[in-house]
Amino acid sequence: MAMLLRTPERDAPDVAAAIAAARDTLTRLGARPFLHRLDRASSDAPVRTAQVKAPDPERASVEP
Image (cartoon, rainbow, N blue to C red; front, side, top):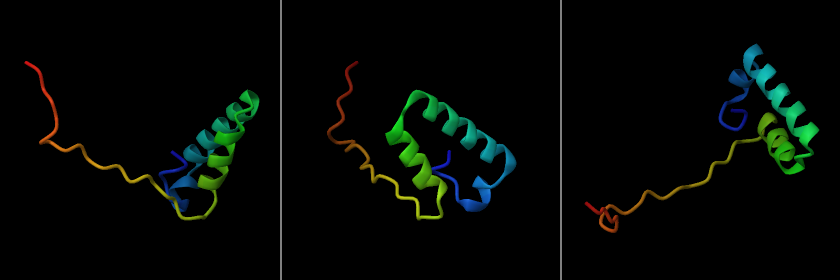
């Protein structure tokens, strides 16, 4: 959620609480890579998303 929402939406009380709970859980689990991603997403840095190419319908195989 933190990665998808912009700053005004991330500052909403319910969203901020969810991010804080996620941070607590990730800290308890020792999930440093995910904490790093959460920190980057929580900053005002532009959010980068992966470019996903849609599957080619011509190559899709469907078996009856």
